Length: 232
Image (tube, rainbow, N blue to C red; front, side):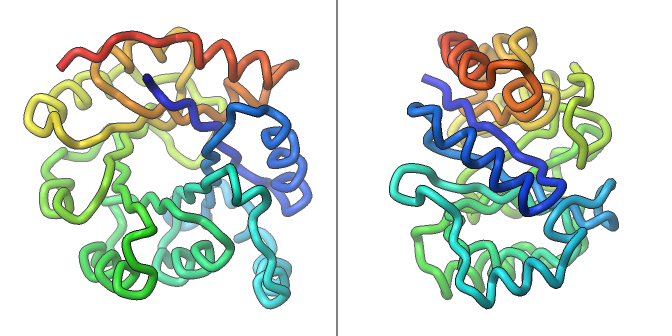
């Protein structure tokens, strides 16, 4: 059984709240990914980097992500200040953090620091771009709980066309590391979902395919109904 994870790329705090409220009304939504883009690691800029003072005020006011009793939050950190951003989002209630291996930061040190501070209640994953070599993942596989393959050539945007090159990348990784859970973010549609599930992908991160349609609830259900047995 695959997990469908709606993804929000917020343009503002109001936009985030509106989309979270919409997704909360879908009973079977159990996890949501929030994409944060700093305009340096990827573009264009998204909230909260577009309004840092507003975000800092929310943090100081002990703002928490909604519906934490039934929804878990994953933050896709497309930013260079991952250490500070990671700690901040964890205090807001996030329990999954996705780091990008192309960042220059020492991910092993960061994961060790966060694990020591927050314990084993937090899951960590590494995202990798289509153009990057799979060898970048090798040194982190013992420290992370999942790998996220980016399904589009240019990250940081929603609505981009699925890049089929990721299929071979997934196939090659899964052949060597069948025990590592895989998820795909970017370009996931009803058409590409079946191919991804056939390759052993467990979680599908869906942005525009749910949030940019007339009936997000019906779209979410349609993705849930695409259940293809894994090839292992």
